[in-house]
Length: 179
Length: 113
Image (tube, rainbow over all chains, first blue to last red; front, top):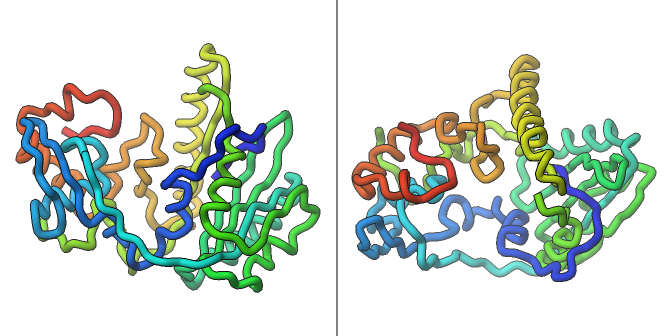
């Protein structure tokens, strides 16, 4: 995933989607994040869609985008979570091989549903940087040593924090060009 | 086509699917005159990356595309296992027989014909 370190946005409020990406591997979110939706169909009917009401439509709406109706309400499954451990790390492009090595080692062979990370290369302000965005959904400060060990670093914000603080931080790094 | 359970989605992945790395390339520019070149370069990057990964043999699922990250030239539904296209077509015929959301709603990946 590539993103750009340009000037921060004025209103870096965390969006739902930016928070969701850190917790979507949790079982409660697996394919049942939105257990109920209210949908308006083409001929004007307003229906409730869930696992037992219009189950075929419930199924295709998970991935079927805007092909079937207008969703006017959805219920969102929630779970309680405390602080996590993560942040953003930036490096010069010379560290790309080392960072991809860490990424690869973290990716296989075991799957930790509490762990979320992305590694990207980004071109901005005339130069290339490598950037890691990491979040462990528990406050486990032993995490991320692989990425922490790669040097040199241009920036490192890894710390104990909650997911909305991390989302706000990332929102400030999104490109603000108009295309 | 089997009945779906409440936990399933259209993308054809499940807990026993092999692990995958989600890859996204994102472009930002300011000059409208660059639109054609940038969108072509972006589509080409995705295409070439898929070819290289496929040739290296390191990718087990070479057809899966995540629709939220796809560019307009990609066809996400066609790459999803488990009968996604058939389910979309059946649901569209049943719930939108006049194709309102296919013909009158612009944008988005439409149901494959």
